[in-house]
Length: 75
Image 1: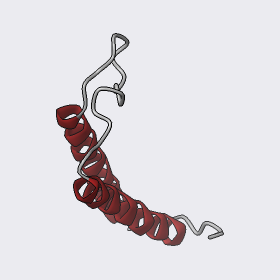
Image 2: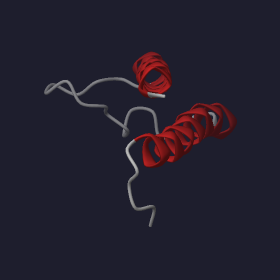
Image 3: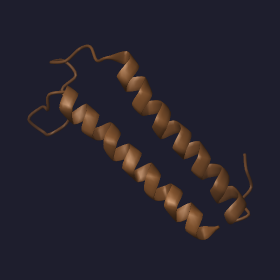
Image 4: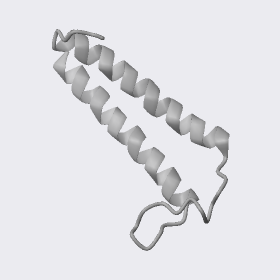
């Protein structure tokens, strides 16, 4: 089960990187390297949600697996 937890963690990391790649492509950066939302005040909400949903789903999936694998108390 620990191997499965590692695989699901790797998936979460990949999905997170895809989300940030989307943001990098969609948003300008400020002089400090952070996202400058003032230059792109509107993003495609459907695309943002699609990325967020994948990230959230994977995080919840991983959470359940970690609770079982490490006999954690689920709250």
